[in-house]
Length: 202
Ligand code: FE
Image (cartoon, rainbow, N blue to C red; front, side, top):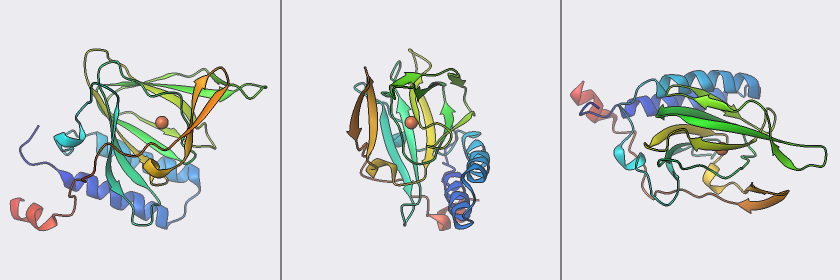
């Protein structure tokens, strides 16, 4: 990794998502254009400060990188230690997932006729650089795992809300459902606005 972190990449991404939301696009167009922006962001691994890529041996981490002033969207880094996985969960808002390091397995779930949440076809192996999407419209329930049991994987997600504050659900199996609010693993955010410093070194 280079000495100088390219935080401008994250700022540019934030600016692009904000302007896409200003355009009030239909969700499909938003996911397509937002997905292209996220693909560009995760194409380079030279911008994420180490503090937001640190695994925790107990559980996967969700670090807030940026929240929109009107909570229209939030950008987070997800850090999976070796073998770690999320529970089966939903989002209730649109979301885009881009793999920055390592690889992840995204297993979608759906409801059967009785309303029970079951694994559906189409588990995806997401390599570094890959982008995936979720939303109540296209499929909102999934389980994401680190594809590796011997290394850390990191992905960058953007959601259509302040995701750490959204009341949503996990599905522990046997038709169970439990409400949760994820919160965040960090109290301090990366400073993406130190533009004068970037000009000074460029
Ligand atoms: Fe998810």
